[in-house]
Structure formats: C-alpha cells, structure tokens
Image (cartoon, rainbow, N blue to C red; front, side):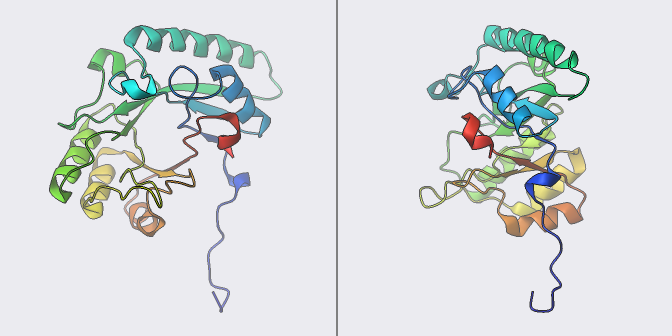
Length: 220
C-alpha cells in the first residue's frame, strides 16, 4: 500500500445488478415489484429474486404453488419492463434453496429446473464438524441445479460463528462444477470471508456479490 501497489477495488459503479434478494413472498419487507423498482432506480439492469424455499418455514418458505405464482408475476413484470426500450431491465426468477442435512436441495428436480438460477444455502443444522459441513456443501455444489453457493459458512458477525469448512475443497468443487461463490455483502455476514476470494478467482470461480436484501434499503 505504501508503494501504491494495491489493485483498483470494485465500486458500486462496477455492479450491473444483484441476484440474491427477498420479497414479501417469504420474509422480505417489500413486494417483488417494489424490490425490482428499487434496484432499477439504482441504475441496475437486472435483479434476481431468491425467496426462501419450502423447508424454511420460519421464513415463510415458498410452496410449489407459490413458486409458480411468483413465476407468473415475474413474467408479467418483465413484459412491462420490456416495453421500456430506453432502460432495459430484467428480473431473474431464482430461489434460495435450503441445503438439507444430507446435502440435497429443497424441491424436486422438475421444479428446480423451472428457475432461472438457484442459490443453495444452509440455514439449519449448524452443529457440524468440519468434515460434515464440507461434505454437505460439496454435495449441494455437485447438484446440477446449483448455480451459486450462498453465504458459505453461515456466519453472523459478532453473533454467530460460521460452521467450519474446508475452504480449499469447497473452492475446488465450485471450480469443477461451475458454481459461483457468493460474497454476501450484508454487513452482518460478509461471507465468503475476503481472504478466500482471491484463492477462488485464481481457480476460475466466479464471485457473486449480493446484498441478500430483505428490504429496498438493504439493496445498498
């Protein structure tokens, strides 16, 4: 740093959109349309909706029927955005699928195949050994429907230690299966820890920078 050798850091101007966000369909504070419009107002060209999946009942996870209801709303909103040729904008319909204890994803494969993308995350069963946690994540990464591994250690800064994982093995698995690692930019998470970001990019793993927003202001 003293020799002015630091690389240029990413800024908000480098971001064209964000993929991991929630709405009132699950545990968000604002509707899908309100969240999308907030992202659009910030100059983004795309927005991903990733409400919680059915097994996470505490967060009002979506039933298959609610998934298709949301899918239809996304289509309607995208049609309205397509009418504005001056400011192209698109909503991608995703899901934050729980990684179950055996490493499988929530929902059956037919429904998983209907999403534009799947963020796979652990929300329950945090009491795991390093081997158990790593095996669970790797099995989820190997699932052909997983596109992004969400908040990889599940940590909450100053509140909850993340479960221990073998970062090298998780990164290698992401590289092998073309799965992006999330850098969850929620200030209480900051997970993946920044010290592993360069290791991941050196192996060709994409980093998905997301706010994990549950309200319009959290997009920032």
